[in-house]
Image 1 (cartoon, rainbow, N blue to C red):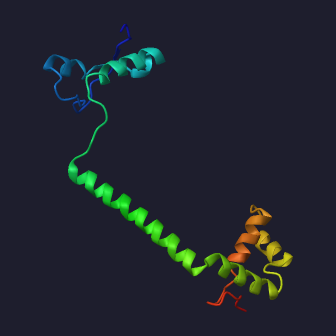
Image 2 (image 1 turned 180 degrees about the horizontal axis):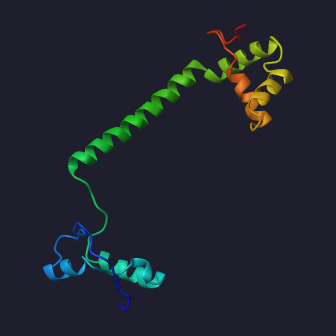
Image 3 (image 1 turned 180 degrees about the vertical axis):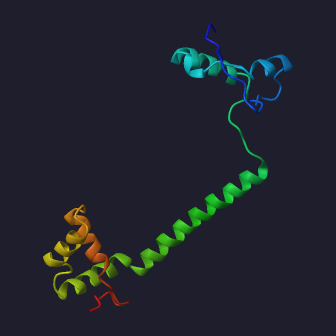
Amino acid sequence: MGLSVEAFASRNRETPVADGVSDQWRKWYQTQRVELNAMTSPQFIAWLDAKLAGYPGKVVPPDATIETHARETLRERIRDQITEEVLRKANVDAQVERALEEALEAGPLVTRSEVESVLAGEPALSWRDAVDQAVEDVDFDTDGGPQP
């Protein structure tokens, strides 16, 4: 390919070489190398395409690996479907709205002074992050109402 060969000092240990490389080339690789980035992009792509041309298409793993993946995929689909059904039957969205209304009846969830207090301790935060942090401190009981 006309690429420049670089010589390098021999090391204390042998440089690993791929299986199937002849002894002659194995010895050469101990002190010589050709960097792949010495190729232009079109050269590299052509070289790589030629190397891969002799191999079949996609790799398909052993049957046990296929079965394990299929089980995990089906498990996730079943979990998603059951979770969706449970949430629909529980009418979670309506429960959330009721709990939010109850929380708002008690007054503001977060005050300006709470936001300023958070920002005083962490000035790099945005005001939104400070509000989010303050809201995380609001506890709710099982009925959805805020805890004092």
